[in-house]
Structures are given as structure tokens and as C-alpha cells.
Length: 224
Ligand code: GRF
Image 1 (cartoon, protein in one colour):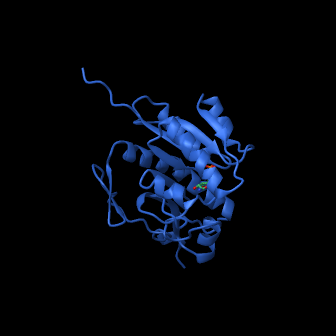
Image 2 (cartoon, rainbow, N blue to C red; image 1 turned 90 degrees about the vertical axis):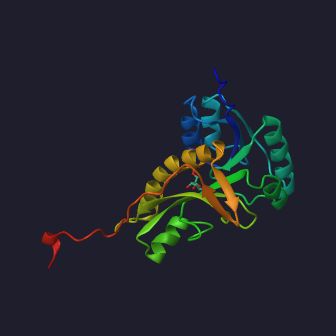
Image 3 (cartoon, helix red, strand yellow; image 1 turned 30 degrees about the horizontal axis):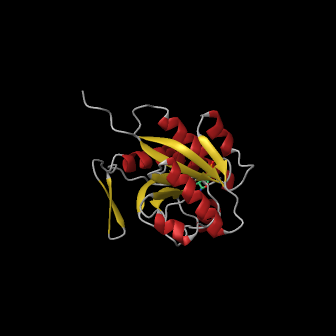
């Protein structure tokens, strides 16, 4: 009988709530999922996400950041020691040292709550509402030194509702994030991603054959 392939070892960097971390932990609870979370690092000791790691029996630690370089050095050493083959940023709210980003190039991914390249940086949901877009969503991408740039792996689209405020839109996007991130990590772990000319080719998947309209066609009875 063929020996099952070893699961990809994943390190996760967080700063806060850790709901995306929890989504990855939940996905990896299935033994057929091709990745496992082996280390969680927070730059903030009070990050609630650390408790998710503790509950799941995953090694976790806080790495202080007296400077960007010192944080990077210590995080890098811990990640290497853990045998991580992928580092996933999940609500990690600091800009990473450029040496760290280069050292983990093409093995470092992030999730951002907008359809990049639209609305990078802080408060992307607020930016989406201010721009009046009808759809927003989330993006998983490989990390490059410039914030919220890098080859796009996967995106999920959600509608913006007329009565949305920032919190409601963020919540709808977050639900999509929790589906998207585990899927993107799976694609990486299965070796389906190739980066060419700054774009990611994904093998063995197909795009959905749909067009969404927002607003959708008005109901006849609502006219006039
Ligand atoms: C998410 O919206 C993520 O896209 C962004 O920060 C938020 C983190 O949420 N980068 P959580 O800590 O995963 O709950």
C-alpha cells in the first residue's frame, strides 16, 4: 500500500482574534487535509488567537518586536525549527522585515479582506463602502515586500448591500475568508500553484461559469 504523503507543515503569524487561524485549524482536523498547523506566532501576548492554538494543542508563542529585524530573526528561527514549509499570515498586523519576506519568498501567503489590487492597506471594507463598489471580497496572495501586493492565488467575491456598514460588510467577507484560506493552503500543499511572470497558474481547478449582477435584475412588481 502506498504510504500517505507527509502533510505540509504550516506556521501561522497572528496579531489578534485568530478566526482565520481557527478556520485553518478546523480544516487540518481532517486527516486527509494535506497541511497541518505546527506553530503559531503572535507579536502580541494578549492576542485571543493564541488560545485557539492552545486548545488545539498546537505549539504557540509570542515573539516580541523590539524592532522589525529582531522580530524577523526570532520568528524565522522558530519557523525553521518547526519544519514549516509555508508561513501563513492571518491577521498579522505588522509590516514584515524585507529580509524575512525574501527568505520565505513563494512560501509566505497572506489573506486580505478586499479584491486586491483594490483597497490595499488599512480599513479595506471602509474603502469599499466609500468607493460604492457593488462587490467586494477577499484575496489570498503570495507576499512581496510592498504591502498587499504579490501574486494572487485565490479570491472570493461577496455582494455589498445597500444598508451595509463597515462591520456588516466585514462579517460577510470574513465568512468567505474562512472558506477561501483553507482552500488556498490546500492548493499550495497539493503543489498546484506555479508562479510565472508575477501571476499564479493553478492546476486541476476550474473557474465558476457565472456572472453575478448586483443589484440583480429588478422584480417586475417592484417597478414604477
Ligand atoms: C481578516 O479580515 C484578515 O483578512 C485581515 O485581518 C483580519 C484578521 O481576522 N488580514 P482574524 O484575526 O483572522 O479573525
